[in-house]
Length: 251
Image 1 (tube, rainbow, N blue to C red):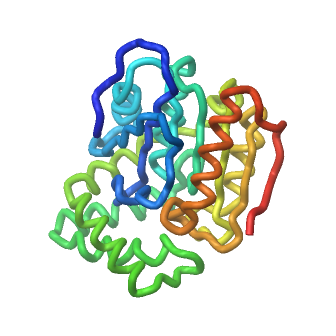
Image 2: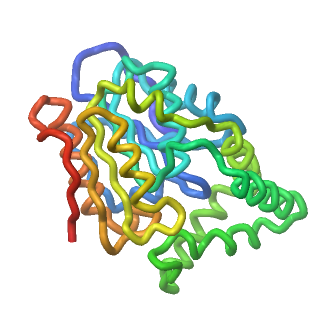
Image 3: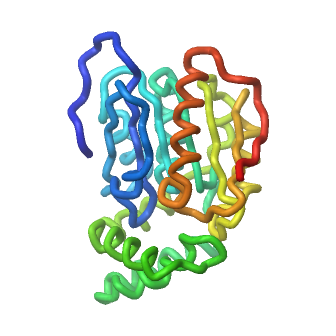
């Protein structure tokens, strides 16, 4: 992770940003985080969601704004379970708050076996299409995704495949949440469709859901403008100026 824990001094809330599987901080390079707020990127490297949540909570001292994509959001739900008083606001996207399904366990085992056999590149190629709208990446998309996934590496990928299997249903955590929350969903996300995000927004009191019609799974990459707007909305909500729960669609 980057950045050292803050001292307990007043100031703008920091952002703690958590990526998904085979993703790193470069995923967020086109997102404009609000000025004046520290941004701490957490690297996911451990084989248990609870341990990963502890890494998130250790990124800063005191309250923070949690931003998570896919597995990063799932880790964020666990951080919220463990320390709800620390999470001052929640921005989640391209994710699923449900428990793993049997076919997911099987897919994760198959990918782990490939990596163990020295075929990490095969796993990258297998996952690549699902990151993009309608499974149709451009050649530039393919190059960027491959570079990011290989920067994360086989060792971290195996750890996170194991971590995926330790996650639990987060519905109870979300219903108990009392922090502002914004939820982003790509309408063309083949991994985490809009229905997953409606369930999250329905569970969190006062949550705001935004559906992005032309987006797939990697929203900070594919719609950095919408993610930037969501972060501003989250800041407004923490100041008590956000609207009541709603569902919006942006072009």
